[in-house]
View: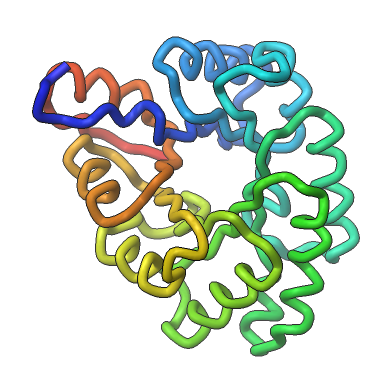
Amino acid sequence: MSRDLPDLAPLIDHALLDPHRGRDAVLACCDEARHFGFAGVCVASRWVATARERLPAGDAVRLVSVVGFPFGAVPAAIKRAEAEAAAAAGADELDVVPDFGALADGDSTTLLADLAPITELGLPVKVILEMGRLEPEALALLVEVSLDAGARFLKSGSGFGPAVSAPQVRQLAALARGRAGIKASGGIASLEQALELVEAGAVRLGTSRGVALMQALRRGAPAAGPSG
């Protein structure tokens, strides 16, 4: 590993959110996360129990479940039930998609009622902002409501939208004002990009290309290619 480059492993949430992947892929993702010492494994709630089999309680790798993924367009009670199921199956953290319809209406009361019951479960919650699709006023409102609800992290996007950029991370950091950590997610396809995001203020990186990034880091070279 190059002495001039920081170790990214403790910042990476190794994501497997492709709905067309099955049990073997989930287990392999867990094994990769342990091998490289990643911060976490991020999977759909459907796969939390399977991942927990590979990552026993107390494992250094955090088990992260998405909730309401990828659109957040389900009733709050269903989203809460999914979060409860993920917690019961062994999730350590929850990455939650908020009610973007309520956001479009400027309805902060409904937004808060969507998120607060999930943070009340006691697990660290990251709110997925899809900031590449939000106007500045809507983004600022969502950040404030997320923090009022008790979110520990603000996550730039789901990975199904535009790639995250360093200016977006700086924008989130400015809006958060130290009240939450920043998770950069979506389209992280090269080592250079990952390092730029960390320099901009990201304390977590959500990506399906964690292995490629680590290999590039050890070579001191770019990790090019598609990502999720």
